[in-house]
Figure 1: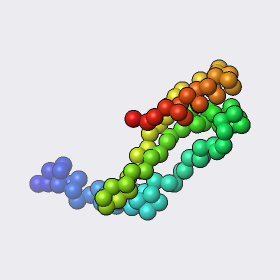
Figure 2: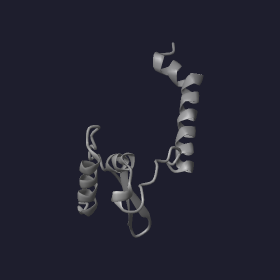
Figure 3: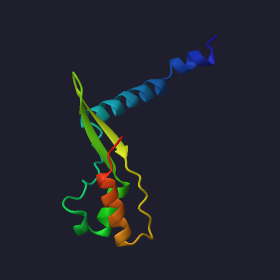
Figure 4: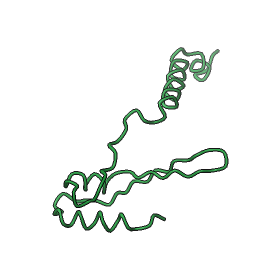
Length: 105
């Protein structure tokens, strides 16, 4: 008499679920996680950036690559400096300049 575990292990759904999981992991590995790349940080002096550029920079992810003995590791950190929807252009500019100078720990 088969048990519920026996029936689950012989199920076609279990095989298809596992095959789908393996396919998803392979696709993620092939594309390297860049399926939905974020916009690049704005270039130049912060005084010339738009308010949207400053808000995006304050909320965006910063990446640092570190070289190890056998590979290069990319460390991603979310800046998460909370730009705020009511901040003026001068407040945003001051916050961007202060955080560009701040050393990352």
